[in-house]
Length: 289
Image (tube, rainbow, N blue to C red; front, side, top):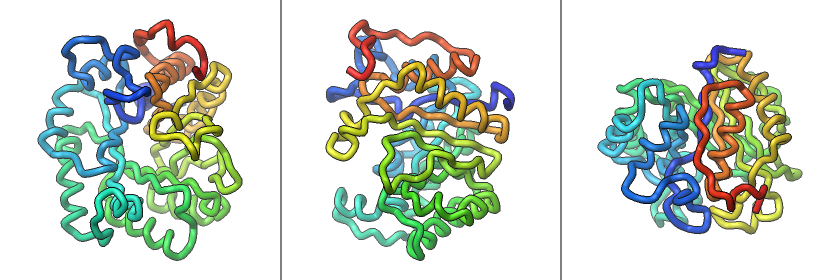
């Protein structure tokens, strides 16, 4: 396995302030706290998901940098305008044509992370319907070329990509990490055995809530607590990939009421990485409730 210092395990996002799936009470204590600062006491990385909806204000990003200790790394999900144009139009009513100003705005937004050495990678997540056809390859190539100065991880979810052996070679040629995901599997799903294609490995664990995957909302879809045996299975995959990569990220996205936090700590224990136990309410002890 690679050096422990090169393995970063955390969660997708750190702020879930409201709704049934909130982290308040379940993780964050009552009273006035700075959530990111508190989170960074337990984990050495976090995946910024809010950047998917709009490029963050560079001033906010600068403050994030100040809230975390040395050695902490952020990864940043690309703006949906680059990867989910239909969703972007539905949510904003704006045109999907991408301009150089769009690219410059996004790059400026993450500049504080880059300058501080706390930018781990960019994540380009594509929707399940994004297929390996002429249009898909055109978009993917554009993303790779546009953000070539950063470490880039790409999440593809349609099986047409993993059915094509040329894709993994293209990623290797460009030192792009092909994201290995865990989520409910369907006939159109990408393969579970994604190779390590760069000097960085990237994992995202979304949970296995098959029943609510298509019918649930942004919270209930992720209401899934991995069992100990499932964490063992995922840890074996992470451990194998770590031996082939110089840098590894693993993020839990099953964020319902802090499930992701608990599973992340469980994986850290199994990998024998330094960890701190997180505070857990008794009501969380039942699996998948």
